[in-house]
Image (cartoon, rainbow, N blue to C red; front, side, top):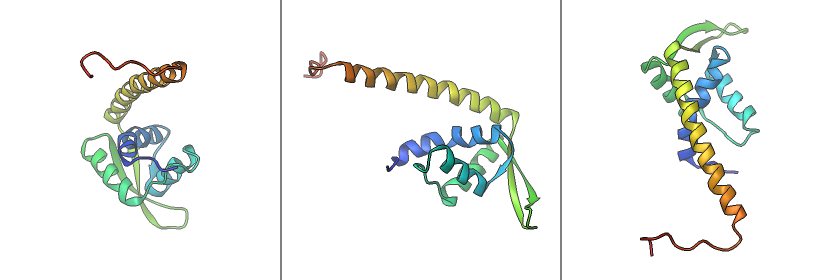
Length: 123
């Protein structure tokens, strides 16, 4: 399934902040985690992730530090900040409203057998 780029972009910040809320991580591990939690339906690339991480860092939502991997290679680790946790809570509240609205409209569409009449003023 292809996920529209607008949906990918809209969900990227809360996904990254949510992943980092579980603990610090690095780019490849974040991409891998997104793939895991979406059952492979969201395929992120480095070219999409790193600009987002840099923007979140500029906003003060994440902080970066250099670490060394198990094989001795340097890599940048990202951790959520208190401001990032606040931003995540706000995004969660926003997404909850959107998800509820979508659920209601899709439920109404399933429950309605006959087509609805055109809304007043739209004919």
